Image (cartoon, rainbow, N blue to C red; front, side, top):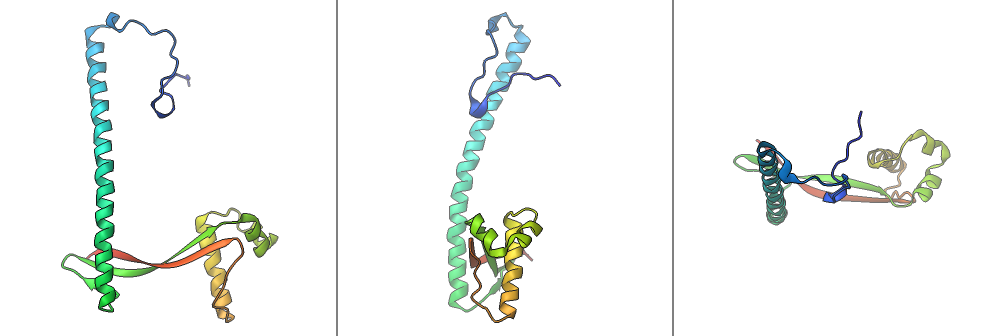
Length: 160
């Protein structure tokens, strides 16, 4: 496969050698490239507008969710059936390895090697399993060195 020069990182220009005089191009090529540049500018503007709209909608969504949570909590409700959607509280957990060396030492070399790779999903699964074992043994305040564990409630929604 031939290595062709292309646009550089983050829109910077790359050295394509000496620039030919674009007026020497035929009118069809000039017209075609001009139309494509115009379309590229339109796309860039549309993406910027959508990003601004998304940011605005995310802020509005968060505010409405807070209002729903407040109403549900004030009435000791865990779910609410609306006309088209149902909202509900769901319990979530987050596991983050903040000190790999401490985590590795806490679980031991054998368990460390059995994990193969430690990503967020593996860490979450491993921590939950260890927490369940500890709770079965009566340790309801389970912690693991090098790991940050959080439990939180989140508002969920589904279509009816």
